[in-house]
Length: 376
Image (tube, rainbow, N blue to C red; front, side, top):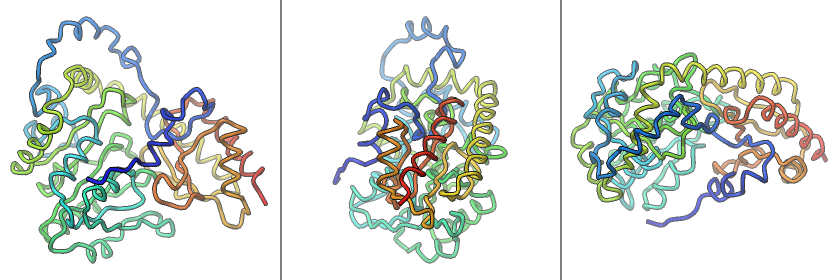
């Protein structure tokens, strides 16, 4: 493994220091939650009585049952679920289990850095399926088909997409599933933002075919990245056994406290998600109105998740480096620059789910002011 720190982590708000940021528009999740805000303020005594032994290596049985009982789970069973240390842990397990130096893998780009960096660190033959602004970041199925080889280990897609906020349709997902099934490979579908889909979450990919490996976590839709709890799903028993072996060699099992918190939150998801989705929808409308009135920017309007990926228009005559300097230095406002995703810095990821409404509105005004000040 050739490890290398990712810019998105080096320059993350938690590393820069939250106290240095007035308007944080970098986050790709809803606001960080407390147990009390999730209606679990009385969970303390229950955790206090929890015996901190090694837990089930596959994961909390009740948690796996709740995940398999998702209305969109289709044929997914509790035995198809492997609980992991976050979605990052699930993706790492998949890559290290299925890839070796020289393995061929196709990954949609732009993408969250770990989906690209981990295969590279392994030494895999990574081929990027570029999602283009000019195409509305839509998936080109013919181009994907031309990239799949007999030795392709898997195709990696994200829906809803990070950083653009676009979504695949079910017809598109089924077309990709048909393609990987016909070619004898697999689809790794990162569904971390699935609960934020519009108008409703799509059905789980793993429930649509044994050729699909679904990945998700508690970090984004529920605002609890601090418990480091995610999962992968596959209806392929041999893969499930392989992934369990990988997990056991890495961590043996998960934190029982993290698993119990996730279990209790997911039991309440029907109560929690409507309010979360209402805030996301209101904030998306604020960003949409602002974009309509900001002539220096253009975008592909997001259809899911809590992020978008606008870019500075060439004809706006904005000094991109000056823009970031003014935004950060003068306004203490933070966005995710394009290089976090191996894209030009004229792009930036803007997260609208994490800040409260006044912080979001102030942050957008600060972006506009910085764009104006950086014109040449």
